[in-house]
Amino acid sequence: MNIHSPNVATLRAALYLRVSTARQAEHDISIPDQKRQGEAYCETRGYQLVETFVEPGNSATNDRRPEFQRMIEAATAKPPAFDVVVVHSFSRFFRDEFEMEFYYRKLAKNGVKLVSITQELGDDPIHDMMRRIMSLFDEYQSKENAKHVLRAMNENARQGFWNGARPPIGYRIVAAEQRGAKIKKKLEIDPLHADTVRLIYRLFLEGDGTSGAMGVKAIATYLNERRFFTRDGGRWGLAQIHAILTRTTYIGEHRFNTRSHKDREKKPESEIAIMAVPPLIEREVYDAVQARLKSRNPMVTPARVSSGPTLLTGICFCAKCGGAMTLRTGQGSTGATYRYYTCSTKARQGKTGCKGRTIPMDKLNHLVADHIGDRLLQPKRLETILASVIDRRQERTERRREHLAELQRRITETDQRLGRLFDAIEAGMVDKGDAMAKERMASLKALRDQAAADAERAQLALDSSGNQAVSPDMLKTFARKARERIRLDNGGYRRDHLRALAQRVEVADDEVRIMGSSRNCCERWSPLLA
Image 1 (tube, rainbow, N blue to C red):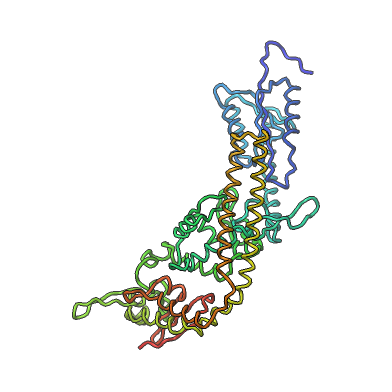
Image 2 (image 1 turned 90 degrees about the horizontal axis):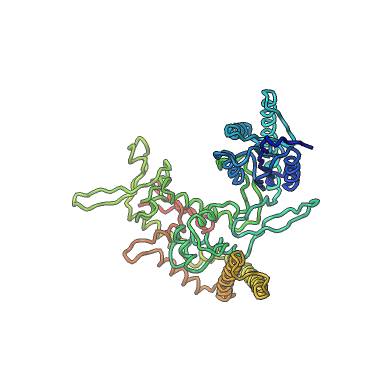
């Protein structure tokens, strides 16, 4: 029992309580336990407990803690709001030796003392040294714990299990297996949003059938105008579309531990764990998207190559040196202007750099477009190309039926949740004006509206797909229209349509090699140059 002199002022104390729920390797003492021990400590020493600061689930390796900052602000005020800060152990206050000393001295400078319930120390130099040694050990232990936890999470990801956080759009979390008391989780394809992801890839490469391939901005506009909602029921933005187009998760390879937790710096590939997930997009489609994104990047390809009128700029290369074939102009004796594709290496360095040839622009444009029209866009050829598409029609139809059933289930489930919420409001169990109730109601309505809009589109797609076989007349009509769509009224060509079929053109002395992706079933062709 402490006996206090009436002439001695009672010290005012503040309790700082913290746990780090993010660290699985650390066996934290719970907040209630820390609070109980802290209150008993203050009572035994006759401290007047004036405030308690509770920090649930924040690491002590940095000072980015709201309650910690509020406590420091109160302790460094003039005069301070309390005289003593009581913690269960110094590791509750900080797990970084430098930061620990900085804030310890900052408190002491304003007359506020930091004390630990389990590590009581005096004020002499030897105890000061012991506190620093304890801080160093706490920092070391924190780093070791972090390494062990990250190692375990990396291994968990490599085994195909989800480590937490929100999954990418198009996936949902499901329980996979139970190991002891812990339930391991995996990702599975979410039918509600999977088709939206596939649509984004299709629009980027092919467009919607009325135009050529779309850019990121055009895709966002397309989705928003047609009421394709985001997962939260909101509108699509450019960053969301770009993230979907570049995420390897969609080809079955989710990348975990890509950035440092502290400074968000990219980590080397050797430290990244690849988690296998069900693929949403074919790898060849993903690769084609990355190639197109790279070609449209102004840091890689000048803007005039992406948006300029020249048909083959950006995909035409010299067969000898691999350099780009760029546009050059010249004037004839009559004053007429001539336009050519010429090897950029030869143009810069002369024949010593490359002996690659120069070819009139109109001639090469016609040669490439005519060859694609004559060789690829013919009924017999198209029949071979479309064979795999026809074979997969039934599979696609079945997937649409499953998707529609899932959407109908989501609509029914959401309506039931809304009904229960309305019943609770009518019964007086929930206040209609309550902010949380309003937010929940709006969220459920957005989810229902999104599912209903998606179900309507899925039903229309299912109704229009049918099971009609592809007849010879249909192939002839399709081939004729495809050849027509490549050409413009003024004699030119549709750049986006042609580039959907030809991804690379190589010009040699006596031939032109035209190459396309396997998804378009293009071959290497070698038309002779006259």
